[in-house]
Image (cartoon, rainbow, N blue to C red; front, side, top):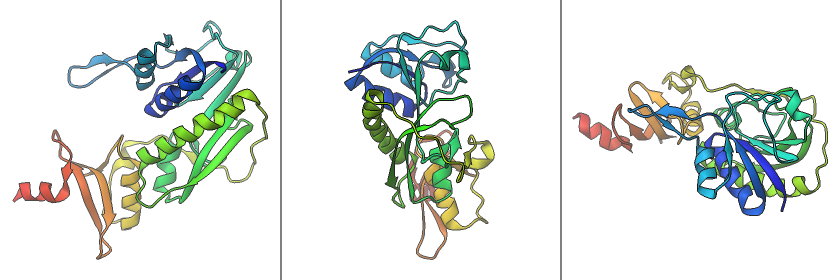
Length: 261
């Protein structure tokens, strides 16, 4: 059992945090500040903070990181955190980043989403040393897995979290690193509003991949509808399966059409 600090914010980081806490002594969670959410705009904890509070893990929520931030552990695991880590902190100990792609492919903010949008049939998880350059640190461990045609981002993130926790057990105990290759670098840009729009003039399989990439956490848009599941029909056309009208609940697309009659 190792003593760790975890830096995480998003649901993927929360999942990895919970898994690490089963095997290690997590002394501190670094996470982003609470944000107002919902119609009432009340402050809500980050997903990682909610897990930490449930497990009794101390939480720190600095708006930015600098040399004044205290890190109790010699090893810090970073996973879907969202804040820039200055060199003044990176020099203090071993910082390990969990990245859900096969680096150097899909460096950046949205590796799972971009992999699914591209139709990648194989992806994976990389544990690498955190460095100043974006997702460019030397690799300590990497494991690939196949992506089924109907897997969405939720499935890929869950599989990645399980693999990440397992890989980290060995890396934390025996950290050894290999430089990332220079060939094959691609970047996974943050999802923008335009990425969510479904253009029916696009190829049907591209539209289905976009829906998979944005489900179940963001949602693709078809006019006023959020589309959560879709397929290429027998006629070769794009067919929504599960949708959500504005202000409504998720429902079968057939039920939505019946309600319009």
